[in-house]
Length: 141
Image (cartoon, rainbow, N blue to C red; front, side, top):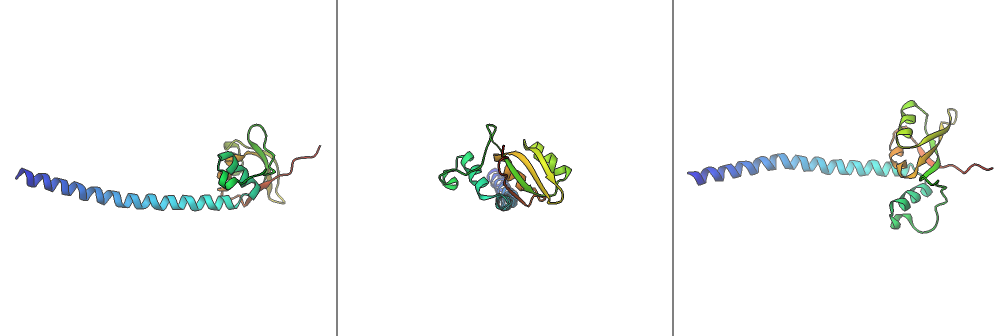
């Protein structure tokens, strides 16, 4: 009698575990593929030289390829970039939260020039209001 109860308990426990685990694993697999798709979409908004610089700073030699990127990065890891986006308060707050600083904006051309940490550009590009991010030529003296 005891053995039958123990066996029934084990079978019920296993059924409950499967009932809970299968949907959780499916949801996790879907969220990982969604996250990868969002990352890929954000990376497509970033110019090639900036992406190479991001890979170089991450230590991803295979993607960074060899040679210089031509991106001017200051000693704090920031680069002057041009965002093609309408400047809004939420976008400005996001730039500041990611460690960047808005240098200038043009409402007519819908561009924003900002000094941004290179490693934060993908997170900025994930914002729906940002259409593209390119390097800004260094100012001439």
